[in-house]
Length: 436
Image (cartoon, rainbow, N blue to C red; front, top):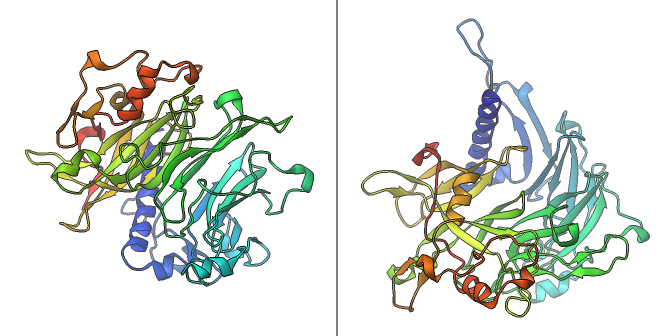
């Protein structure tokens, strides 16, 4: 088991090298094609009698269909398929050899609607006003897929079959109406995340959780759950839930990098302007946020909002008397089937000394931060300090309960003004796995 995890970690590190190449200047090659290239096997012993041959083109597996801005990926290991979200298309690639895939045969075209209206708002016709597929999520056993695209700055969503065919008229999913606002971004350049959650929601009904921009102007960023519909009656049993609108304590210009369904929670990873640092200047911190899947909001207070939303800072730094911080999370990875560990890539601010690192975080340390003290600012000019224990109401804010609508107003008012935890989540072994 240990060697398998190390193998997966090494493969993850190899992939991060490719992502950094995209980030720092060679995206012309990597953004428009998907390559499987192994210079040497990820795992296994190497000794003086067994040498790996490197740089042989036999190891390259390539798929390319022109300038399509491939960005969204979903791996279905059971079907041996890689789904790729691109501009105006979703591709279904054979993992055994993606070079055997064809641009037309293995693709579903999803053309944007109302391009002229998008262009009239000052957006470019051949990039901004296309339909960039930004969400691909399996539904149920994976025979159906949830798709969401930018649709010429008017987000739209679909449910399709895994073989890239559309559902019949009588087979539509009640929770997917074609309106993709708050489910995927307007702008193809925006960072967003989404995860389809089958079980654990109110009524045990399936739905999408997302982190994205919910307005054309980008003024409203949101952590969102769709309306939940009864599968038989098709009635809306539970309305959507979201973060507070225009409240910088909840979210302040976030860039989302990942989301995960774990036990009774959904976790979101992102970077944002640090509200607790604002009196000292402007800085960006990395965060992990948590909501309970059973959350139905408050009865009167936070009736349309999360009643269990909490967030904490992620600490990725080189220890010392004056720690060196990698404040800006760029990506997050969890080994499939292992909900105990997360691996994140972090960078420093572009305004200072450049550096990057990989830090690992355990679910135990994340949950410990959410079980710790809350953080508050008494006045707009005050320092941010931990909340005294005797000021925290009961039941503890952020705790999963059977009915959040029954929570007292004291709890709802507290969580409305105190979503931030005092302690940061420490990285494993108190140092990065790798830094440069």
